[in-house]
Image 1 (cartoon, rainbow, N blue to C red):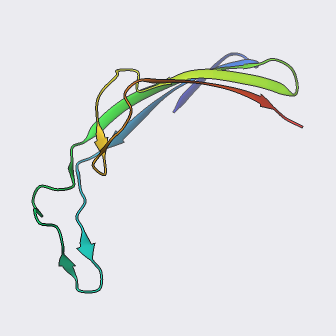
Image 2: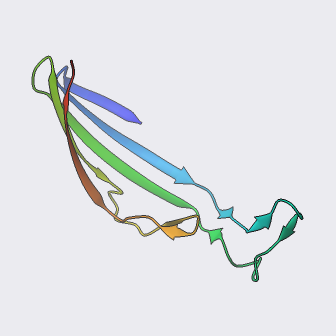
Length: 97
């Protein structure tokens, strides 16, 4: 994660996420055998690399907000072997007591 502050009230960050190839199998821990009918195929997950960006703003001493984008490149990738969302936008508003 790289963070840059234009001012104390205006931080921005860029992050990079990487995961190497993985293989997940259905292992029966009691017998030590794989119950997977296709043990060489099921659960194979390719590597992925994605960038995320976020900009925040401190409105007052108690209030702050941020907006950001996960997966800037809109890549399709899978984890465990479920699909992760492609590009997503998010926003937050926070009040500190």
